[in-house]
Image 1 (tube, rainbow, N blue to C red):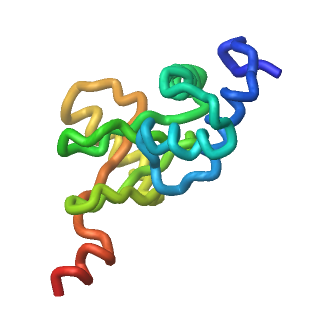
Image 2 (spheres, helix red, strand yellow):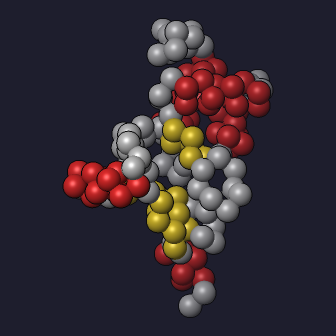
Length: 134
């Protein structure tokens, strides 16, 4: 089996993809590495990092920059969606918040940009962090 970039799907690459697909918490590369080591103990960090880059390039994963200088996070959900991010702990949750075609068209007309896509990030405090401060 090969990836969409033509690279062979090795057991190590499959383990990285499986770990990412099983995640709903948008893990960092280091977190993916820790998870993959439980099923592939001999895998190296460089293999995991290269595989994540390959999956992003192939369109099989998203690399997210969630702000505040945090490490990049990865998401196997490549369908159009947005995120809400906790400003305290960095937790990110998928949300569906599509803009209407009219809003996108209006923004394009206002800015002069030919908009080809978008992603929204909402920032706030997650329920766990809110509960800790009350």
